[in-house]
Structures are given as structure tokens and as C-alpha cells.
Length: 198
Image (cartoon, rainbow, N blue to C red; front, side, top):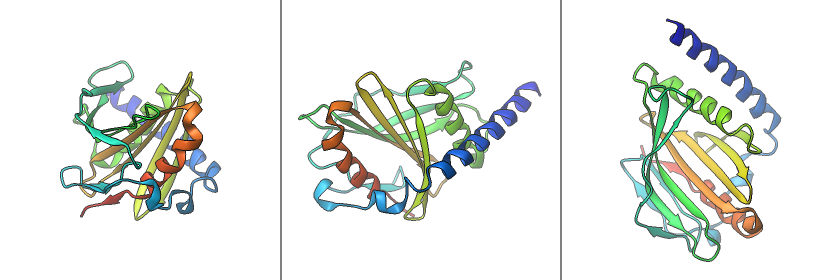
């Protein structure tokens, strides 16, 4: 019972934080920011299992997914999420990486509708000391969350949303800060290409 009450408190706190973050950044993250510039993106990837189609940044090559499952949790392994990358794209010129896959809750008691809010709360707590910012926006009928954070010279953009089956799909773009000017236009174009497969 205490665990359930704690979860509800975390969810309410997270919702309050996200609604504040969303209002604060509404003018920064609108549809125009993520329009698809076809000169910046590669060939379309369409994945029925993920329920999405998207284009990686141009010249980022698909490589065998050597990434293993990544567990995201606070302290309790039974109260967290597992990220399973299916795709990994690599830019040989500057070492940037895009990984894409599903995020699954390890807690069977969390409903599909509230799962994404728990995931937002977990990431917000995890990266709060890493120059983290969180942005919510709607594009192509999809409600996206973008978590940006930096550690030393590395920057990551975690983009996640729910597909038509209410499963969480995540695309994570990682790059070095000193390549931001050349990499960000391609990342924005890639984000602008994301569509759901019904």
C-alpha cells in the first residue's frame, strides 16, 4: 500500500513538473522546429514491430545492434524500465550515434496510460544534475517528449512517445558538443520525419 501511495505521489509531482516545463518551452518547441529537411536525412526505416517509420540523419550508417538492454530505475529493479535498442546508426565522421527501440516497464501494476509519465519522472530525476531540459510537443498527431542532457563533452537527446499500441518508443541521439552546429540540423530533420504506422 505504501509503495502504491509513493507511486501516486511521484506521478503527481512529475505531472506538475512536466506541465510547467511544457508551458515554459512551448514557444521553443513547435512543429516548425522539426520540419523535415530531406537534404539532411537518409533512407526511411519502417518498422511494424515498433509501429513507427523514421529517417536517420544523412550518412549515419546502420550498424549491428551491439547495444545491450539498458535498465533505467531509481533503486528498486522491480520499479523501473528496460530500453531495448533495435537500431543503431553511426556517423563515422564525428562519432554521433542514434539508437532506436522500445522502452518497457518492469512493473506489471503500472497501466499503459500512466507508464509514459512514470518514465518521464524517472528520467527527470536521473538527469537533474546533468544540465537537463525537458520539452513536450505535438507533431504529426504524436505527443513527443524530448529530454536533453549533457555530461562533459557529450550531449544526448532522448525522444520518446507512445505508438498506436501505447508502447513507448525511444530514439536517442548522442553527439559531442563540439559537433553540435553540424549535427543538430540533421537531428531536427530526423525528429521531423517520425510517423506512426497504424
